[in-house]
Amino acid sequence: MHKELSIPDDFQKIIKDLLGNESDSFFESLSTPSPPSVRLNPCKDFRLAGTSNIPWTQFGKYLKERPVYTLDPSIHAGAYYVQEPSSMFLEQAVLNSIDITQPLTVLDLCAAPGGKSTHLLSLLHPDSLLVSNETIRSRASILSENIQKWGYANVIVTNNDPSHFSPLHGLFDLIVVDAPCSGEGLFRKDNDALGEWSSANVDLCALRQRRILKDVWPALKQDGVLIFSTCTYNTQEDEETMEWLNQTGACEFLSIPIDDKWGVVETKLKNTVGYRFYPHKVRGEGFFLSAVRKKEPGNSLRMHTKYVLGDKCKNEDVKSWLKDSATFSYVIDKGIIKAVPAINFDLITFLSDKLHVTHFGISLATDKHGKLVPEHNAALSIHLDKSNFITIELSYEQAINYLRKETIEMDTKEKGFSLLTHEGNSIGWANLLPNRMNNLYPSNWRIRMKSN
Image 1 (tube, one colour):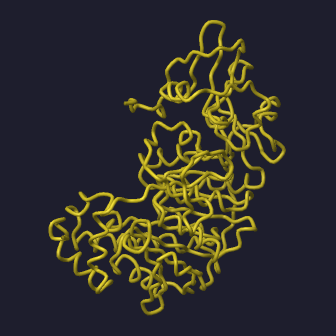
Image 2 (cartoon, helix red, strand yellow):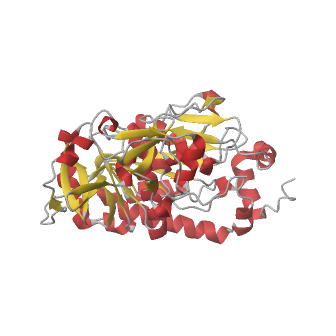
Image 3 (cartoon, rainbow, N blue to C red):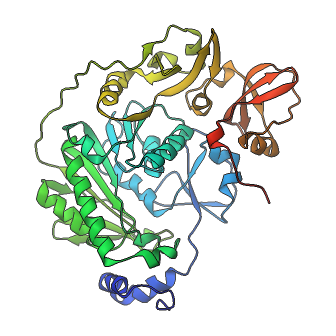
């Protein structure tokens, strides 16, 4: 059967060495459909019937059928994130390796399109700061969009090479590296990837992963935790890469409690402990994860900078826009009034000097001749006080037309800037005028897909 799928002989050997008698079951699973799944935003509303729980996460749901996600206003409101089930195991690694009841400084190094980062934001203490990084500029834009939709303020998005983090000695309590890999775990979802697979590419991916780990390792503090994951099966990119890290720097491999019913396989190679997901054993795709605690001492970082994060905001009116306004500092950055978590203001300022930051805080408004024009980011924020705004609930058809940046008909006598919602979740702003509505949805985010 797997010969008919044109699975490379070298890859077949990898699987047979790993799974032995289970190999046929594994190859047969590549012809079965992937289970549709989403992860919910705990700070937003999402109503969907016919779901079942993903057992290793409190936020994950299996769906009975795969909807057309693009045509669901709730996804544009950040009410949920479409994510493959196995990768949500990150939650177990975090909960069992570090105390999330305390504020942490966290780096998601290879973050686009945002699955791991949005998951981390749902887990971390609200006074934590997440640095969500993506090296490739185009992917960093997608990451920023998804982060803004999720609505949390305690995150910055950066567009940096892993080597740029090396000088930040001991800054991070937790680093997540969802490493670029050969993608063997996605063969079921993308059969075209089978034709692109090669042993040479595996070699290149393993070398790249080790370069990434070497670059970021100095930025992890002593006794900090690094969580490494891939969506591939070969040991060269998984256990062998982690064993290489152990030889490079002193590590303590961390065990993660797993329920036998989950079908997750714990593996050991020399000192390495890892966790594997196979599609014939779990309702999910191929995935590998390993967590280590850094045991070697490192240099401490002096956070000194002369960098100034924007200009001081003198407009007091904008402060009433947020429910917890006293916990924010307000600055004007490139003409936009921003709210920055006060507890992390100095850290965000320091990082803005050292890294290429593409998004920070909450973009609230632009001040146009004394008139505040709201920013889309503010509409999606979980900190927005909706009671301070005219709020209009849209039907499904109205919401989709709005998200296409079309003019929509609304039976209202209200005037001025209004917050538009669908099923209770904010989706954006409109400026209501006497005879028309100005749609303020961002043009580069608009839905381009047509309905059937």
